[in-house]
Length: 208
Image (tube, rainbow, N blue to C red; front, side, top):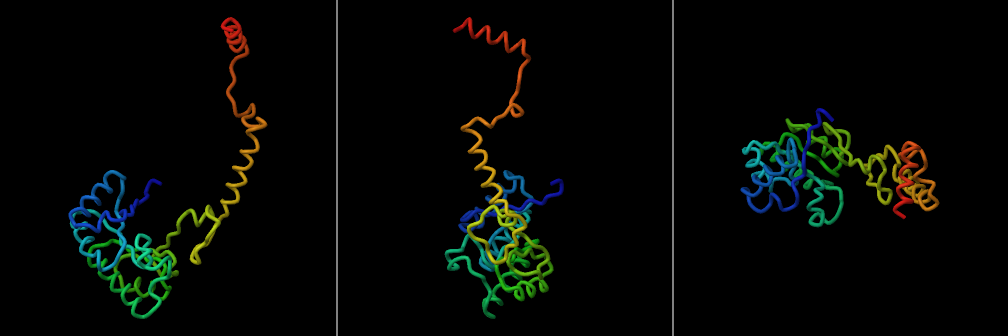
């Protein structure tokens, strides 16, 4: 897209070791991947790292709630902020990331009232995924949106198509067409002038 704004997720352990390495890795990621910004997962514990990266003139998007890189530490893919105490921590995390210089924050897998309260108290936009309609924007993984994976569907996903079945049917049809040589058919192949083909066959006969 002409006006796409590309944000890249900083890989695991690319920003947790030292601040200097975080800045270096973020800058390299930005340049080599052609990004407009980077995204870091975590709350108050990564705020100072984010501040340093932003001070290095690298735009940063935050990400709190269910953070996939720390899913084992969180005990699995579970909704975050379901108690008053944990919800308050998410708000504190969001405010810390805003103060550190984030231009936006992803709110993932948290109760809608919590995400709405956070969104209302921030000056920067929030992007929700499994966080209700009160966020400033929404994101869905396109594999989920298009139905490319049919084994598991998170509660927050609305499947706008079921391409998984279509893809399986297409691949099955392809597999069935190749052995009996139904594919490729004449309309899928290149031809040559009859005279040139005849001349070529004569050459083959001479060589044989």
